Length: 73
Image 1 (cartoon, rainbow, N blue to C red):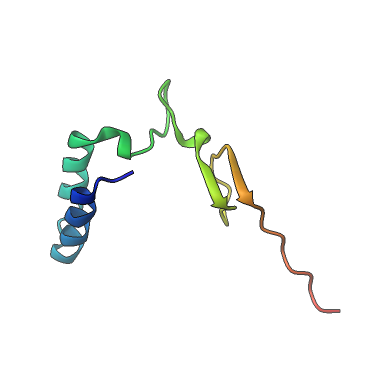
Image 2 (image 1 turned 90 degrees about the horizontal axis):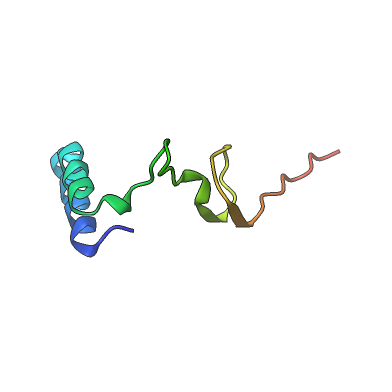
């Protein structure tokens, strides 16, 4: 989770076009705000979603599973 000051930093960086620098600063100040994609500290497969993602992503679970609507006959 991003800290309030980091949320403000991201919003400002987006407007200024300095998003990459803001992300690097946040990674330094709060590394647990980002998921680790691979290796022994990988965290993506432990995510829990409220709504099922539209694409296949590593996750542990979701609360609401998407059920596709049936096509009209």
